[in-house]
Length: 199
Length: 168
Ligand SMILES: [Zn+2]
Image (cartoon, rainbow over all chains, first blue to last red; front, top):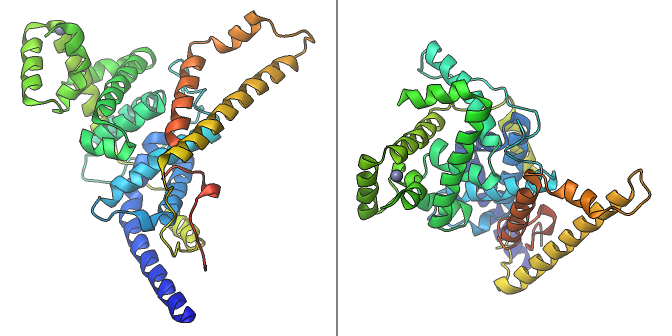
């Protein structure tokens, strides 16, 4: 009887590992993009990604399958992001006054897609100041703005991911965008002007 | 609607996240107020710029490293024990926060004491270290996050998960 029970558990365990790995395969690239926007460099993004997937795996029994896996994963990532910042003592050092959180402004390649080489070049040059602007935001504002503007989520979904109210999401996004504007105006005025004149 | 009220809703307006009435009120205000209209335009430009950012290229070998690490992890064979009620955890969390704030203050004082001058830190010295533009804001955010995080079931430190794992 004891043996049978153990076997059932092992089978359940195998199932859930397979299930989790399949979800992880489908989502890890997108999740890496989110991690990169939050951390600003590939090494920290990978740390965040790995830590988050580990936590997700450990808590997988609690995952409610009626919720999109990415929403659940992003919630864990948002919390893990704050935890990692705290562990590194970064929460106090991040401020608008600093040009960059840790001086390690990301270098990354533009993903291959159908965009023309010229468009890629424009995007790549815009990307660096915008990413620097993200890094100079208050971490929760950054999370909310990335979820809304890069990931394209609605406020309700962001509220679910961040475990907060829609009103708080609304305020974080608004204040985050204002921080971004203040940063660009000061640190990258030419970029700022070109962005504003485009519309 | 006045400017003060309108300006707080501009982001939600460009995100189409206001109710029908509010959307209309803001639209009317923007039609007659050039200051708010240009503010809305700026915020919208930033949103579009972020929306167009290039997708990030995944580093070589990331997938292999991730799955290798996941395979080292035993499967949680039982539903992890959920904290029975929020209150005890909140209390523990609050105590931990209080303790860590106390520790932080103690460390700060110790560090001040350990400086080259053997004298006690003066009030000026202390405020010189804590009254920069960045620090109080950061500390406040840090505390808020500590509280939020310690009450969130997903956010527990890795070593302290209340679940039963492995072959039990
Ligand atoms: Zn106005």
